[in-house]
Length: 108
Image (cartoon, rainbow, N blue to C red; front, side):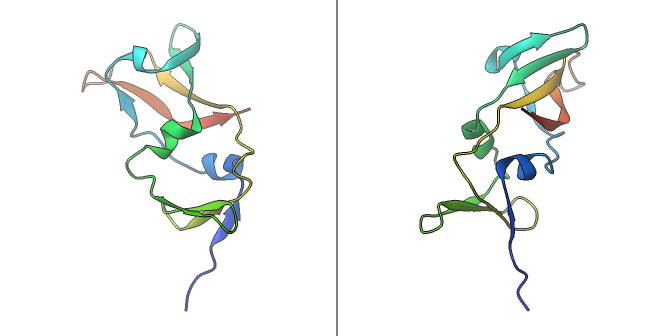
């Protein structure tokens, strides 16, 4: 019995992802738009998200959508309706000497 693929917008899909494993060698790799004593806030383009290794997807030209295989299959619809995407990165380096995010996307 095959399971029906769930359809979501970019906003719905991205708010359900755990990205706590993402980290960077240098904060200069990111587009930092705000900072405070504990965090950097960086704006991240959707194309950088599509490059995340576990973000496997297949484009469906007929429906102008992509099916994402990051967890259960999800069809992302309305591909052009991309929200502004931000991540929050700890200023304190991790024990691996890398900058880690807090685990979620922030969308506006």
